[in-house]
Amino acid sequence: MQQRKSEDFLVASASLQQQLIQKLQQADAYPHPTAQIKTITTAASHVFLTGSFAYKINKPLNLGFLDFSTLEKRKEQCEKEVKHNSLISPELYLGVVSITQDGEGNVKIGGSGTAVEYAVKMKQMPPEATMDNLLKTGKVDLPQIRLLAKKIFQFHQKAPTNDEISSFGNEKSIQFNWDENFQQTEKYRPELISSDDFVFMQRKINNFIQNNKALFQQRVEKNAIKHCHGDFHSANVFLTEKEMFIFDSIVFNQRFPCSDMVAEIAFMAMDLDFHHREDLAQQFIEEYQRLSGDADVPLLLDFYKCYRAYIRAKIACFTSEDNSLSVDERELQKEKAKQYFSLAKKYSEKL
Figure 1 (cartoon, one colour):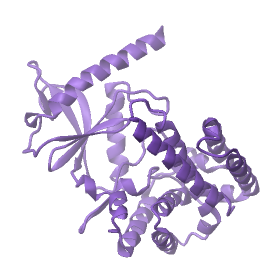
Figure 2 (figure 1 turned 30 degrees about the vertical axis):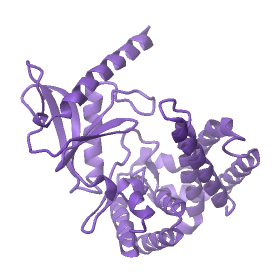
Figure 3 (figure 1 turned 90 degrees about the vertical axis):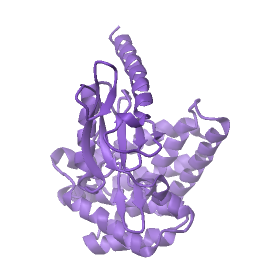
Figure 4 (figure 1 turned 90 degrees about the horizontal axis):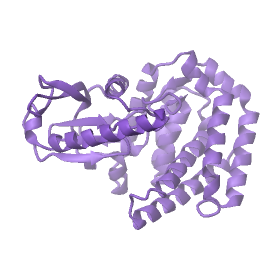
C-alpha cells in the first residue's frame, strides 16, 4: 500500500511538473531578456536554454540510486550540484534559484510567490560546443588536451575525501562494482557480447583484483580516493576558443563518483580512445601524470579503462531496451554496446 501511495505521488508530481515545463517555455517566466527558449530533456532532468542562462530542474523520480521524489530533495540536489561543480567550474555554475507561482498561476524564476520547484542556474554555452561534437570534426588540439589535464588535476586537489569516501576504493568495493557489472550484463550474451569474451573479461578482472589487493589498499592510504567528477567524458566538457568548462558531475549518490583519481582520468582516456584519438588520450595521461607525479597511473590505467568502457557498454545495453526510442535508435545503442564491449576486451587483454 505504501509503495502504491509513493507511485501515485510521483505520477502527480510528474503531471504538475509537465504543466510547469510549459510555463517555463514562455519568456515572461524569466527576469531577464530571452532568446527563443529551447528545452533539453535527459533521463533525470529538463534544461531550459534562454540565450544568456541555462536553468536545470530535476524530474520527480526515485530510481533507487537517485531519489528526487520530493521538492525538498530536488532542492538539496540542486544545492549539492552547484557546490560540487563550483569546485571545478565556478564561472559556469551561478547558483540555485527558486521557481515560484503566485495566486493567479503565474510562474517566475525567483519570483515572490510560493516556491514550486528549484533550478540550477548556469551560464549558457553553445550546445554544439561540447568536446564530443568537436572530436567528430577534428577540432580538439593538444594544447586543449593539456589544459583539460590541468583542470582535472587542479580539481582533484580540492575534491573532498574522508574515511567513507576512501572506502569506495578498497578491494571489496571494487569487486562489488565489477560483480554488479557482470550480473547486469549476463543476459546480453551472446547477442551483444560473446560468451567467450564475457568469461575472458570476468576471469581477467577477478584475477587482477585478487592480485592487487595491496595496491588498492596503498591507494586508500595515499588519499587517492576522492569524491571525483564521476562522469568525466567528452560530452561533459565545453570547449570554445576562449573557455573550457567541465560540468555535470555526479552528486546524487556517492558510489558512482567516489573513486580512485586514476579511475577518473581513465574515463576520459577511454573516451578519447573510443573516438579514435589515441594520440590525444596518451597526451592527456602523460600531462596528468607529469602534474601529479603519480607513479601508480601505469599500474591501474588499463584496469580502470576497462571498467569505464564496460560501464558505457552496460548503459548502452539498458538504453537499447527503452521502448520510448525508435527501432533505429535502439539498434544504434546495440551497436554502441558492442563497440564498448570490444574496447573493454582490448583493455582486459593487457591486464
